[in-house]
Image 1: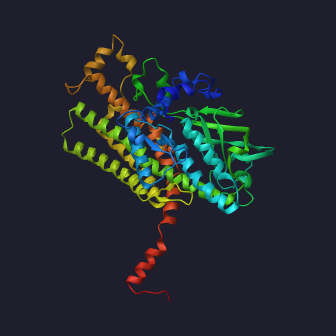
Image 2: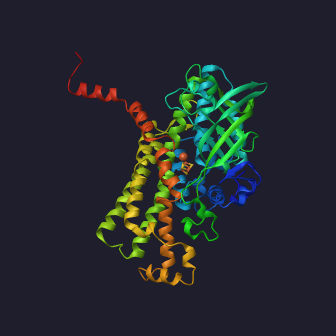
Image 3: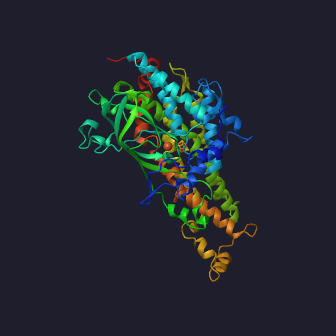
Length: 484
Ligand code: SF4
Ligand code: FE
């Protein structure tokens, strides 16, 4: 059994991805970088949770590949129950970290690639599925973090990949060499990239004939020569670099987004899982997107739990917890959050087996789930801001708190319900600030909108999956109507 602890994971990352650029500086000591550390701790949590008695049952699964217990973040779903457990695991991790714990993208990519390579081999006689099985067995045995890299920069949205002024705006095979291919391009918005061991690269959209070089799916280790990492900024991120991190809001954990550039990167044959089969690019994108849209019905709900808890607590600290409109707002937050959870559970429980054997979520319900996620967390954030009060955006810094001259005034004038310490009240306000307008809002809000595709993408899928003709036929039959 290879179930690493958080500590073993953190040690495994030392010295990796030495070419990262963070805030204008090339940094090779990422493990001690104030901006990176909180996000790494969030990933480490997913390892420790597989050992923690309260969560280990949810976090562990028996793999059909290596026939052993693995961390569920590397599991290929074998039943609808597995899909449900995935959602429970994500809600738990979100609620315990209050941020994006970054490990789901690789999980979703693996499940999509597993079934797609099976289908592709059956049609084209390729050998991708066995290759992927071997690769993923190794990932499971080593208990690694894999980043799923899908989103290309896309350049001029009105042009196809081959018509872009710069062909690298969609990641592509630039050259073929004996034993592999050379790829070039970039992937944007890469969640947890610098905390991963491996990168699973996938095409960003359905490709057409003539676009074979852009139909590439493959894996590379994070420290492959030619890959550059440019750290993404988040609102108020430099607060994490202050000596006293009180103002950060989330005292331990945080998310991570990275722009990743692939400059003539060699990929050996045994790590290639799709190469020019344009007819399977759409399938892969659709399956991955649906898994990731399901994911948000778990992780965002967990972070929503934190926001609801913080909002209720600040209401108590302010002495307004019994006021009727405050109660209504808290109940509304719960209702919205649990609706998202219902969606996550529904698309999971309606999961079905793919020809390859792993389970796929219900595509329609997963897209409904994600479309709700593009709205509800924003409403939760609005309600939290309403209940918390304006101090959320105007509170003095912790440095002033320590100032002998003004510190006492802050303590005196920010005191509210005497059952709570004024510093604790400030902590809760900072946490709500973090999730609604600070660094945490990248994961909780911006990612809710754009992660796994923007709302328009879900609407397209909902329109496609809704079987409208069948509904029309039923009405026609009910009313004995036929077309003239
Ligand atoms: Fe996982 Fe959610 Fe982060 Fe995506 S946004 S990696 S689903 S925690
Ligand atoms: Fe995401």
